[in-house]
Image (cartoon, rainbow, N blue to C red):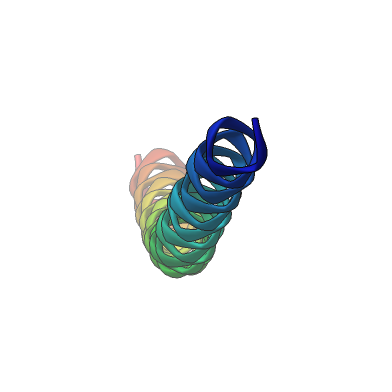
Length: 80
């Protein structure tokens, strides 16, 4: 009887070790995924900010061109 109990205990110990190792691996994988996700999110925010800045610059250039065109048309209509 003692050997059967010892075998059960050894099997349980092995199962506990295996589950512990699996859990550690999953936690490590989760940390890697979290790290990758944080890097991606930072990159995405940077790209989004750059795009917004470029859009703002294009808007400013367009507004300046419109002002110049309006000024030119006013000068032209004043000369006529």
